[in-house]
Length: 478
Ligand SMILES: C[S@@+](CC[C@H](N)C(=O)[O-])C[C@H]1O[C@@H](n2cnc3c(N)ncnc32)[C@H](O)[C@@H]1O
Image 1 (cartoon, rainbow, N blue to C red):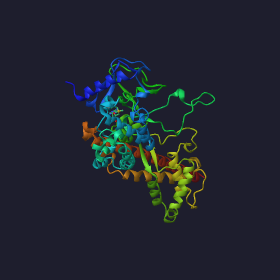
Image 2 (cartoon, rainbow, N blue to C red):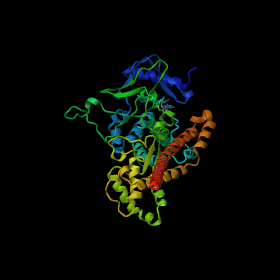
Image 3 (cartoon, rainbow, N blue to C red):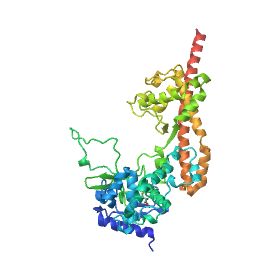
Image 4 (cartoon, rainbow, N blue to C red):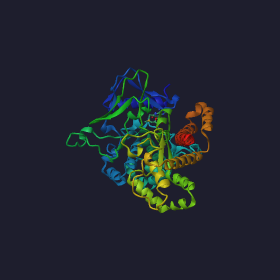
């Protein structure tokens, strides 16, 4: 017996074959619900490197240009009025969804999800399991709701004839629909690169990258049926003139799953945007250290007179001075790579830095540069090798104090989290299990950073005491 899941998959495949240029017969849509991955795409025969898996006409990508709403001058007016690509895409998706079987994308909508594990849908208790992870501040549900209520819904409701049955939807129905479409866009939409042949070229024939231009988003049927993995990634979407084409990155054996990649996302962001995580993304984990916390801890380490000099005015000037060099952040990321030089040319990373460049600048200005002056000088902070041993040590100790303070914001220890994960067993991919993995990953980064700072501090202290001992015995010998 086929359930609705299998049936909608079949209808979707038939629809895709009928309206898209190419679907490789060596692949199929598979049911990975038993492994918590919904639908996915697998090879049924061996595939060679750079083999085309399927292609999609640009005109059949669902976006604000292809939707039937954009073909109606009044619909186009609504899109222009919104003047926001995310809200406009939500609006055209609501339009297509409400068209039901009248929409050319009906079979596609039927394989898109209606429930999500993204953070937007977690309860307060579930979110509390993330403890002090900064990802909780990035969910943006309240601001999205405000935007929907004040901007999107009035525009949609102003043209009821373009949105079938809209008048029967209450505001909360419409809000649920907007959340659903917004969440689908977040987890399924692609940034649509332009036709490479239409991009402007410089005099040497190189394509100029339009830096700063954010790419329009679009829903690319079938391309979004691939699951993703940072390490198992074996397929990639290529943008061509009239089509976009999914191709293998290397040979793929029959029976293997085809994986896209979502980029260098920390697991916290994977959870926020896609509602899942795997260990393979842990190499991109970060823990954020808020600048406010750094200032608070550094002030608490200073003598009263010195602390009093760190005024709001001083901090505003310091922020502006650091910002001028691109070193100011509201919070600084610590990652697995934070303690290695980023690249050899990076001035601030020279000399095996104490820790990431921006952070180093901030500590330097707060601790060392601030001793005799109210206004921070607009000069570049010294390189680590140019700081005196005492200055280096005071920066390291303050950094360690900040890391400990950040650790203290999490209510359980690394050992407790490890035990919880063991106890969860097969439930490790539940919302609670995913939250524990995120917070544990962040704690491990803090621990690692603290160990690195303390190890340097001890090594320097030992080297100094060896040198003192040498000096004393030298004196005795004399
Ligand atoms: C672009 S869709 C991929 C197709 C999706 N599995 C489906 O059934 O519609 C992205 C969603 O698939 C799921 N997903 C993708 N990669 C995954 C993976 N490696 N493990 C578990 N779930 C994954 C997540 O729910 C994510 O939000």
